[in-house]
Image 1 (cartoon, rainbow, N blue to C red):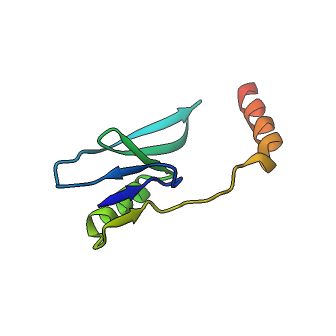
Image 2: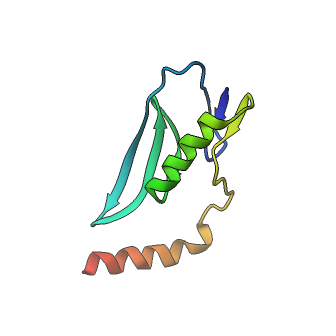
Image 3: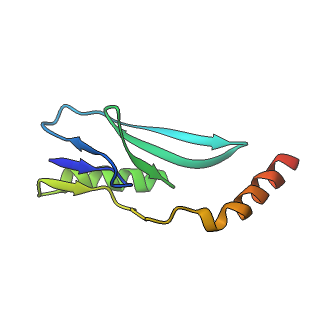
Amino acid sequence: MLIYSKDHDSKFEFIGENHNFHTDAKWYQGVCLGINLYCDDFCLGTFDTVQEVIDEIDAIYACPGDVYYVSGYSDYDGTDDWKALCELMAESEET
């Protein structure tokens, strides 16, 4: 099966059953910013909760087709909220 990443910008050949899923949580000043999900060394995407990660792995294994797209794709690039994000980060640095 061919798996496309959450951003749809890369793909991974998921052939056979000898693959390892693992995660890497990203933290900033005690706040979890997201949980990266990997299959072997391929980053499938970033998720907000452990349950979303578990659901994604379950969906990959349950996929009956030859192609799987990781859920949660959005073409939103965040530029509209850049100023608000900078202000939020500055506030968090003050505390």
